[in-house]
Image 1 (tube, rainbow, N blue to C red):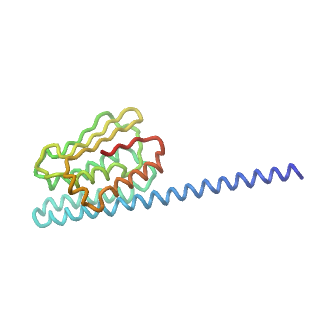
Image 2 (image 1 turned 90 degrees about the vertical axis):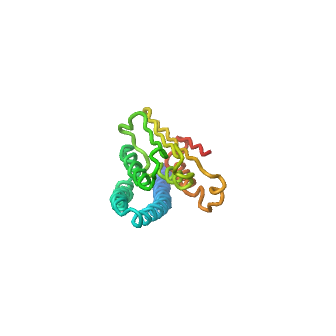
Image 3 (image 1 turned 60 degrees about the vertical axis):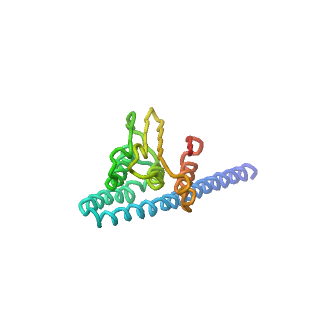
Length: 203
């Protein structure tokens, strides 16, 4: 009876532990889905506003923007519904986004986008970098300046170094009630997905 009781105790304990792990996994997936949804509407809102402006002043560019937006939406709706995506796909997605933003820029030297090394088989959580790029465009100075936004990726073995810098008016940023929301969302995602395996510096 003692042996049987101990066996049942350990069986129930392991069963309970597995249930706890499954609940934690489901909770994390739900949280990540919620955090992802916090990013998407903000991004779409800004993009649609840009297209609306282009329709009035430059219909051909508006048409190009709609095609690029469809590519972005396809990525967001299908490719990003996984825990990890190939870094090459994530880069392609960001390049489409940047190309869409470039359509409304008159200064070709306003944005610098650099890549060093090869992502090869690297995989990353989807839509992890775009909030920084989106934030840089949102809070940048007049697009007539040079190097108003500088984005750089460095790939070395399994390490990804990402830098996003922009010239901005600190007074306007402080008055923006939504300032920092997107970046805080990224921090939460990083905590959930990468725990102590990342470094994030926001200056």
